[in-house]
Image 1: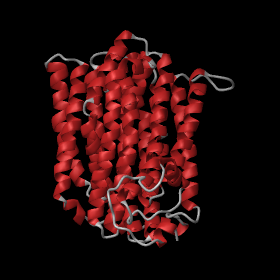
Image 2: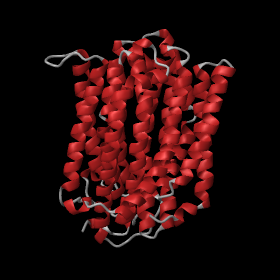
Image 3: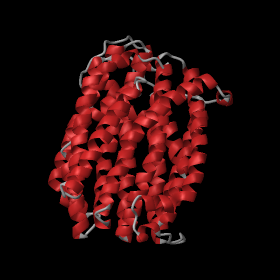
Image 4: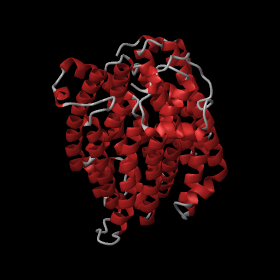
Length: 479
């Protein structure tokens, strides 16, 4: 039994996360991967121990997003636009992966809070079965329909000529689904360090192989933009293999055995219920980006390339914040499992405050240094203008979104996946897309109108989430 489990319980508090020790010592403790009891002790410290590896996990993901578009941008605007349109299609895959992950995280976190390690392992195995089945169907459909999908998205002939990139990305979607899903299991169990190591391994390989396959360096073939997709799938595939090896290795909080893969219809239906609403929730939010891209693509490849660069940089800022949001989800799920709903609620508000400090500072940097940031990716004046506007305008909504992303994640950690689903439907489809179309097309503001709509949507999301979270109905959800 770990030291934190055997120690005398201390009352929960929202004290500073590293008040009892130096920052670097606390970071080292967070990265050791030792087991901690997150249902007891100071809340701030628990969030810190969970968030450090989760933030570092997403930092590597965001670094990859930036490095990938950096190399692809050397191939011209059509190549960048191909990546942008394909990423919009991949958003559907990410939505399914994250939706399955929501169900896995909520179920595993609740079982861990209840001290039911066997139940957590069994839930993890059932989630993997679901993920593999979905990945196969989507992979076949994506390979066949890639050029047609690009055409529907408004791609130019030059972009459609790069459809090989889209085929490889959609065909290899299993690496995305399994990577997201298995890491969601680790996060729900509180093994955030393992999830961090998995993504660092996958993306480190990806970053190294990317330029080799794109430009044909050394013995590697010159595949152009398709090489970026090949490198991505190889890196993620290696990450999946490592993640599975940790799941089946004894000694972890979640140890999947062969018997856990025996089909359990009741549990699978419960996870499908959670995952389907979670998938629909994320799909509503992320698929709205497809609508936004469709509006922007009507202004040409330069506008689309500028948006793609700006969007990748924004992801660079937002992904680390998801580390704090994921920490809140784990704290809420385990807190409810341990019968401590008030601790779960305080954890969400504290994580939101930490996120506000971080994203607020990043927003200021984007507003001030946007031209310098964009200059690292393109020298095209037209593309630069669109990308700078994207960064500066969207960053204005960061302080609001800091709370919004944490609170919606907290709902999911509690197993209340429908509340954020309705929030996303209202904010992104009934509010953001109509405003984007009206400002960009009707009022002739161009892509700037889309960026303003994104900023307004972020702000609205935060206000609605805070109001509904305070009502507290999520505390009664059963998982």
